[in-house]
Image (cartoon, rainbow, N blue to C red; front, top):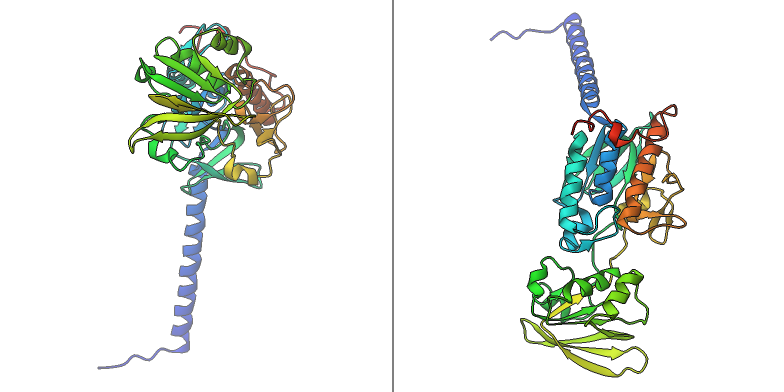
Length: 371
């Protein structure tokens, strides 16, 4: 077999050919990276949070003709209302005498869909960075990246975790006859119900259950209640038994169900045992913004500081709803329905300083006039 010997010229040609292949490969990679960047959609506004405020904000983004994406970390839209208060009657929205939480969410979803925003479910946004051209990149816990020119934080109180009752027995009864949320009112019909808590949710549930339950007892560690005055007055003037200042102390029952609870007077320590069929605990929620706390946002009392234009300290980042903190904050859904459009108007001005300060009235919008 003849062996072919390579001369210096042949070796030089092979070396140049190899270098050309490497250069060609590098060019191809750069072109592919460019194509990927070109294919990556950049939104005018990305709303983090798909609860009531996020949904109404998405609708108003459409009114301002902003390309919009909504990212929600739960598997469905509706946030805290859908998760914890689907049957709770909401009565503090103008023009609506009363509406169940889930029904409100369905109407908000229909309204938000008017301008076809992109909806992303089951993704929790964890990372935030700003590119050289000002575009913001939001990274989910799954690693997916979302590109946007502005961000509106409608994340409520952050992680939706209730404050559970501090007892080793509580976990055994949770999901049986110990409830941290009320999904179906009929489940309490004719039952002896004890509610532990004194915020607006505890008061509202007492009023909702009083007509259908066999009895309702509210246990609160303070004399004062956190609900609206009219709701508190209604509760106290009804058949609801109100124990203040008392605290929930102990659960007693079988392996399957709580049969009674022990409550103690906050000052004297005097105990009282109350037999029950169902126990509802409304001790509030954990306020935790999670990874957002590391984005450089100014935080006050566990919430995100905002000015009257709903601007945060980060350029192009706005906030609305329960997540927002500012003087004279109105902690009602009705208040959030004002903050959302305010944040959108600020985002519009951020993107286009020559734009009008607010949208036209919905009665004049070309897409809505003939509905």
